[in-house]
Image: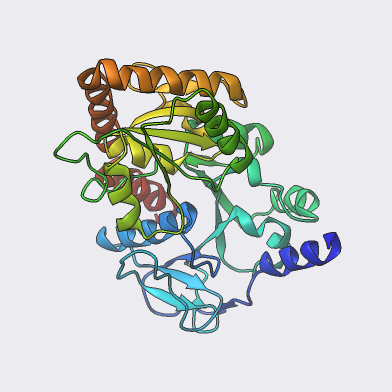
Length: 342
């Protein structure tokens, strides 16, 4: 099973064949974002699509490249320009943006085009067989124009690992039109996402149940939903439990905060830049007992001082929606690529 799984992972991380024209194509330079053919709710894929949309809105031609012809994500609404690897013809003036997911295959990137590695989670940089050896060689390549990350934490990581590379942080954004607080305060509902640290999540909930803390609370498991359905679920939750683990940023707790939830839990390290103790309750990484105790205190506060908890949730919403706005992301994104295209 280990061998079969490893081979399947290697196939998934293999780069598609990309054609680079040896002569100028006569069109303006393009920014191509290579993206895995994944049609399940995944924050990293959503960010790639958003980058392309924002760049096009700024007059910088961009497109998503998927491997399969006709493939496009359907779990969120979009009008993003999408092409298949077979139909995309790159120019030497273009920029190819490659997720860190393809780390083991970097040696197979086509020559003659500048490459930006979009590393949305530096803790996954060396995932995949042979990634370390491939990265050691490619980090010295003249084709590598820059490494883009999404948090200050990940920027420090990337600069430590690749001291000779240009590292740029482009903040993530949260769609404030979608993720916003409900008009009426939510009830006694706790939401969580089991995709990360599922065993830890179950243990925290078990601790709370055996103590009788959850007897009059509804526990909402948020998974397998569209972006709109996820936002609607957040708006019903008075408390959201964050089980982030070694994240590039931590989109679920950020979106929960934007929706007015009071967030308790792990920062995932990448989320430390917005887990401020005055608007949420960060918990020491991996400390299950502290997590359960912090959640119980938040539940008690919700019962005894509901408006105070609501106010902290609304303050968190204001911070996320202002600091991680689409406009702030667009400004950093456009400035970064303008520096390369100039």
